[in-house]
Image 1 (spheres, rainbow, N blue to C red):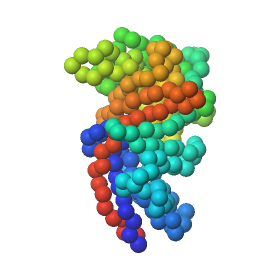
Image 2 (image 1 turned 90 degrees about the vertical axis):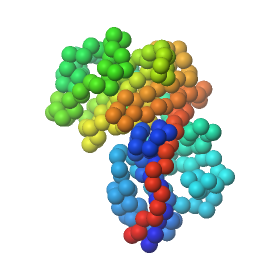
Image 3 (image 1 turned 30 degrees about the horizontal axis):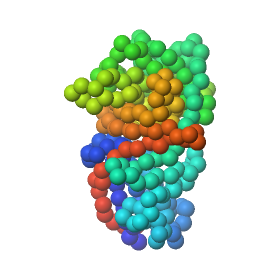
Amino acid sequence: MKLPIFIADAFTAKAFRGNPAAVCLLENKLDEDMHQKVAREMNLSETAFIRKLHPTDNFTQKNVNSTLTFVTLSGELKARRAEDGIILDLPLYPAQPQDFPEVEDLIKTAIGDTLVQDVRYSPDTQKLLVRLSDIYDRSFLENLRVNTQNLLQVDNTGKVKGLILTLKGEPGGQIPAFDFYSRYFAPWVGVAEDPVTGSAHTVLSSYWSQHLGKKDMHAFQCSSRGGELKISLRPDGRVDIKGGAALVLEGTLTA
């Protein structure tokens, strides 16, 4: 059995940056067990899109269709082509104010004495959003050592499944201007740090849109790989998140 396989880095225009995502196009005759086996093998990082191949839905191989739909644990995920990248159509999740003493131990364990400006919680995604003080800059967030090893012991209630650290952006200069920065950690689901995270930005987009008074924003996730995201909030309560993609491997998987 031979299967076409494409591996791309998402939210970047350069190879070996952004989020490593395995994209595999499979024949319709394969059963669910085989899908799961391929998904486990191709899961290079945290993202593996395993999709049955349809003759009229061959988005990766330059067909005329502009949209692909993936069925995920959190519902349908639609991706459509744009001239300068790929747009993900995602729900927008508000984050409500969180009483700091309830999560103080978790935050202190993760980032020590780093000053915190705001704390929010998204019940829909079970993500805790922690905004760092405006006294910090991008380089501080990039170099911040986050202790994820002990978070499972500090919070094992099941309430929190992901920790978002975020920081207000800076005016443009020699580097591109961004509206906000972030990093994302999810040891509760086996991910120490996610390189670039679309789901985290469904919460971040809602938060920063309110605080900046903007519907269109430019964001950067400050992991060691790093990735840029262009964000547009829509009137229907959803958000378009656009990023580039760099194909790093194309070949045939034999099974």
